[in-house]
Length: 184
Image (cartoon, rainbow, N blue to C red):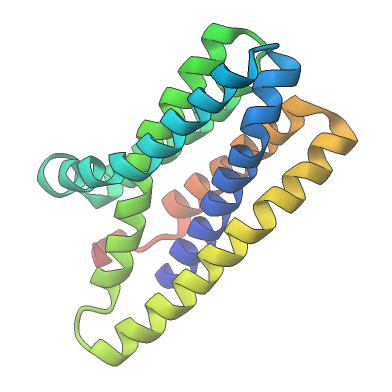
């Protein structure tokens, strides 16, 4: 059903985001050889924008792109951003972070808003849906750092970003193929 597509998509989105987030400072320090001060500054700017841009992304989805287009465009930016991060060049790293910030800004509020539209008739169903949705989101956020640490330990830094790109591509494909667009 549409609800499970969105919930599992958000699960993977949070798993990917927090998995990438946990790698960020270590990756910039050990792989890109940036100073601690610069690594922590990049982390601070990245996390700040990740939580601020969904406000703008929600407005863009509501007024200009529509929910479906904003969600797909956000997913594509997230995939591209992770692919850029998997490259060891500094320019690619910064471009990847920018794509992830903008992609998160479009994807996160849109996915949550669509859940609300699925259950706009009854408050009880909407409350139950959001409860399950947020549980899956938090499980993804909790598992992300653990899974990504294991992936990086086993296959290297770039594997963590590639895992994100593959998972987010699957989320986009499932959304395109199986989501009933008439519901939004």
